[in-house]
Image (cartoon, rainbow, N blue to C red; front, top):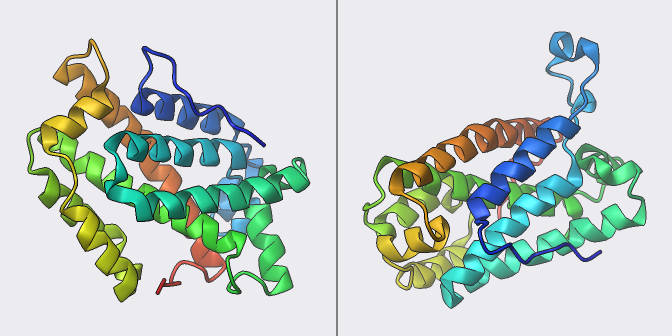
Length: 229
C-alpha cells in the first residue's frame, strides 16, 4: 500500500496531524457499555490507517530536518511498513490495531523478532517523544533546541533504549537544527507565532489522550515494558 506522503503547498505537518487525529476520533466506535467496562482492552478501537498516517507525518518532519535523525527515521519507517503489510493482508480485520496485537499475543509472537506488536510499541514511543517536544516548544518557541530534544528524549525514549540506541541518539543530538530552524520547518509559510502555538495546542490536546489509550492497551497485553538494545 502506498500512502500519499507529499503535502499541499499551504499545508503543514502539524495541520495535517490535526486533521488525521480528528478523523481518527470520528472513526473510533465504542460500544455503549464501554464506559462501564473501561478497563477491558478488548472493546478499544484504535484505527490503524490514521495511526500510521500520523506516524508518517513524523517521518516528513524528520526528512525536512535532514540526516540528523537517520536512526530514528529508519526505525519509524520500518515499523510503518511492517504494520502496513499486515493491514493489507486483511484490511477489514486489521483496521483496528488492537486486533493486530491480539493476533500476535494469541500466537505467542508478540515478543519474538521484529513483530507488529513491537512496531506499534515503538511508533507509540516515537509519538510520545514528539508530544513531549511539542509541549516544550509551545511554552517557548525560542527554547534551546538541543536541550529541548534532550529533555524530551530523556522523558520518553531513553528509559527503553539500550546503550547502542542511546549512543546513536547522542550523536544525532549534536546535529539538531537551532530553534529558529526547526520552528520554520514546522510552521510553514504565512503563519504568525500565535497561530502556530494555537495549532500546536490543538494537536497536543488530540494526541495526548490517544497515546494514553494506546499505552493502556499495550500495558493490558504486557507489551509496555519492552526495551531495545
